[in-house]
Amino acid sequence: MTRRAVVVDVVRSPFAKGKDTGALVGVHPVDLLAGVLAALQERTGIDPGRIDDVIAGCVLPVGEQSGNVARHAVLAAGWPEEVPATTIDRKCGSAQQALQFAAQAVVAGEQDAVVAAGVDMMSTVPMKANRLGRDELGPRLRGRYPDGMVRQGISAELIAARWGIGREECDAWSVRSHRRAAAAQEAGDLTAQIEPVTRPDGTVVDRDEGIRAESSMETLARLKPAFRDEAMAERYPEIDWVVTAGSSSQVSDGAAAALVVSEDVAERWGLRPRAAVVRGVVVGVDPVLMLHGVIPATERVLARTGLAIDDIDVAEVNEAFAPIVLAWLKETGADPERVNVHGGAIAFGHPVGASGGRLLATLIDALEGRHGRYGLLTMCESGGMANATVLERLS
Image 1 (tube, rainbow, N blue to C red):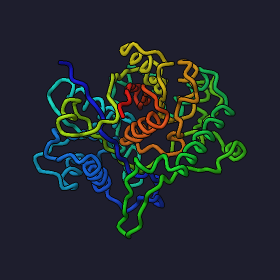
Image 2: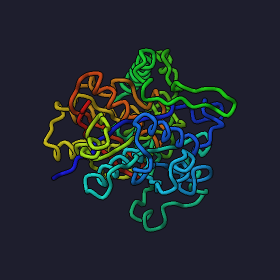
Image 3: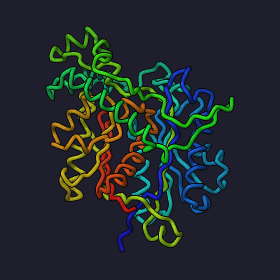
């Protein structure tokens, strides 16, 4: 009999600004991840001794996040020493890839219960800290792309130019993201997915910090292009420089965890799953244009499930930059009212190793709230990759 992987529940921390004044500063990354693991155990009632593996995404596994942060968090959560764990890095899609690896192990029958998680505290371990100031590409890769790689912001500008996306569209999508996130926050739509975090000074953090309800077209219009570069302008004269800090995801701190089990095991153990993992894919694309992988990833996962875009009741497309979602909408023809219905990373922030967990939690919440059947989660990734996962609501 074919086994089906189901998601019992998803828990995440509040997402905080990834700077030295952020709401989660002072919390150790191991403790942050351990907190969501413990909350997941409490909410699902599972005996952690039954968990076959913990897979946690972490894009910056150095410093406080080094030495297999997933294993450290399992032990910090008080789980049995017999529970193994591994840390993976598929850039921004790391937590989503953890979900797909967990589902694959369950469907294959190798494991019955796996936790898919993720963490990154970008205030503690800043971007590029793991490169140690060295050349991470090497001469052979540089030889294949002699014109050189580019920053993700340049890739976002290239996508805007290729798909004819202007500054006003980007700003409007950014305002939408903040306003929808603020509305969801005030309505309590995010409360159930968030496990409050107590800082060392006793302060309790229970709300996402980056949401700006007051965001407007007028305030965004005053922002300068964030990635303008004269060398890049000469190399790519088609760029109009439409991306600002306001239409980019925020550097953030956060963690998330989901319990994935086989459907038959859920029944035997008395667990009530919320969604089934229908299919997941990962693709590679041109590493210079880089961030458009969500388009072919969506095409592939829909083809493999036999679904059409109109069958998707809710979609979460990670808002690394506004042009990514806008290009995806143009290519897929998806109804914008079904996409990022509670806002996205432009508002919530993007702790890279954990973002897939937030998107998963928000997707399932939105499917339940709208009584939808199918949901899509897709994420662009550094280096020219993208994951896409289709879920089916069960609860």
